[in-house]
Image 1 (cartoon, rainbow, N blue to C red):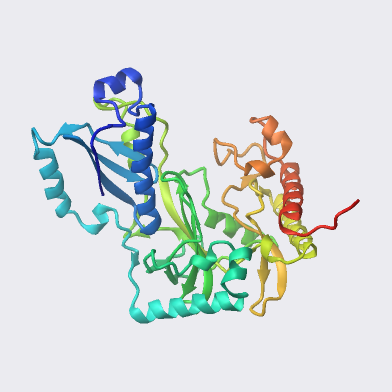
Image 2 (cartoon, rainbow, N blue to C red; image 1 turned 30 degrees about the vertical axis):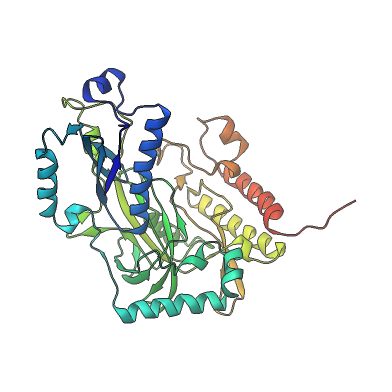
Length: 405
């Protein structure tokens, strides 16, 4: 990826960066240029399946190389390619010899066969039609109606179980949920056709922190299943992406830890991230429920899950309107509510090490006590209060109420 500008380098040169203890300039023009570079990287990650990508930034007679992954960005020193073009020539010469994996392509993802592409298109179209058509799906399940967006390529991928479930072969196209950030978890959610199950399923991928103290979302669901916690998701497959014994892992953190290097500039702490994948039956957001009675039933079922998990020593810690969901059968009949997205779960036992040094939760639905005290330990009462805020928000936002004089 190459970006040209007449001028406006958003980064300091080495010595000035060392003096200021940052490589990033803070004036408006520099911030806009860096934002543009980050936006291009984000869009490439959104449309493609990559572990990393290279960017060449040319400004006037000078240039820099940038290597992006979901954990951070490595920026080269600037060089004058008009006066001395060897760095530019050597880069393209060496880049031409890189394998697709070295260029950043995720080789567990590939183009599907024509018949698989057609099966996917037919399955998604039939699924949307069976749920009321494009307009109704757009209201009740925003984003899903754009699954077949031709601006996004169609891909085939294999999800290999590591935590639970069986291997799944999927066809996907445009995600209906995606992060707008180039760095971080970068979670994406898809409506997918499972060639293994021969049905439409939900597929999610995201980059989780690689730490012995932080369990993956798939492992959390395995614990919930082992404890027979009701009203939690059924997982068809879950696991980190590992190819030939090597995990899909960000590497930018390695340079962030080279404190003694001559070129090192102090930066924020970067953590290694692993690509994690999950396949589940499709669950529906609360706006698809149609009436407030079903909404309250969903919350009742989620309360059961919270209390049973608490008795098993587990707390959800991130309850919001987005992970209180409903299950329907193939005929559209409401079955039950489920509490989804347990990737931020924690332990009731305060003696166990915290799973994250950062506060977890979705701000509008967090308990007042957690918001007022950043050092407060998360308790069952905080999750219960979050259910109240979900009830209040959902009732006002998604369901008609009788007016009073």
